[in-house]
Length: 531
Image 1: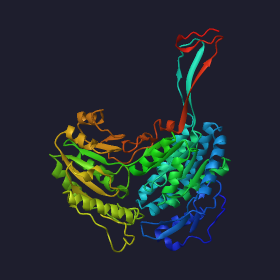
Image 2: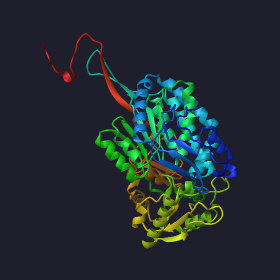
Image 3: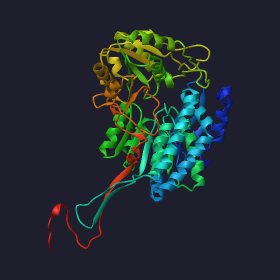
Image 4: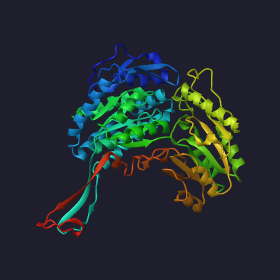
């Protein structure tokens, strides 16, 4: 375990958990998470801090889980300095050896999958199966990164000069600052961290202040592995805090790459700060994702993708389905199927695997849900599945809302904006060109999908004349990306790419090399320079 410098005085209260969360309670105790926790770690020790405290309340039942002390300027500086020292050592480890450490991290996550998944569910509010699925994503990216550790390849090129060899290679970049959002409190960190580690970088993580305990749990899990392998202190660090901490990271010239996941507003602020110092930013921002339902679609299969895309994680995924663009000839038929399906949704405690939809993250999110609904009504939207905040037994936290559906038109302003809640908009279309125009006619460009059995329609949707999003699917929904493909989007989604494919290159610097093994020194382009 990480050496405790500033331990809490008392153990967690068992009353903070329901009976079916006992394993989560024991898990937190086993990881030395107390009522009062340091939120700053260099990887092998927790640091004292005079920062503000962050209270973690579960949206499941509204109860206080624990309190975390955020980073102050002194502890933040200590973390950055230690990370810089660690980078000098870590980058010299052979990449396959770094990959071996990541392999062991994956094994540790396999051991902790159930309790960590339950913690994700309890602290964030997503369904238990989604909590387990998020930890599985962490395991999968570890497996991917292990293979990648032996494939960080460059290219060789033919030189125009005789007796010369030219090639390019990739080198570690340095400190990677990682800012993550509450909706995927552990997976997105792992997407960045595991790739960065095999690339030879070191990481400083600022998790969402809404899910601080997930960050502490992950830090403790990897610490076990790092200690066994004598990984330098500072390779993976944790700093808890709010907006000010994010600004420190964005403006810190010691951090060449800042990977930030969150709202478009936040991303623009990070990009401006990082860009002003000519650093790099990897942005994963808002999504306003649509599914086109063709007249040639398999409607029963489409229904599954649409409903899960709209209500999974209570509509709090960046890839959640916000808009359904439905062909006019099957509009009423599919609308009736949707309404029937929505009336079968079970809303409640996400730790109960019988429930489909859990709570929103907090009451602020509920307020944004209600504001969007009022705005939609004022613009003429017609709710065919009524919204509402649920009250009574089991809903004491005040964070449970009813997934709703509204009929709108393509020119309404409300459909231009992302509401991080289970609000779904239905829009009619006449032909495919119109559908694609509606799909593309928003500022965001993350994920998109089309349901059709028509090959020509599918190919047009995936062509350069089709979807303008970073992700475009046929006959699956907008959410549920696999780690093997690069994840990210265009326009106000930020243009970043994480996870699979060649996303690893973001975490490295490219270098072109030319070697002269001849006895002469000919110049490029045939230039003559005789002495």
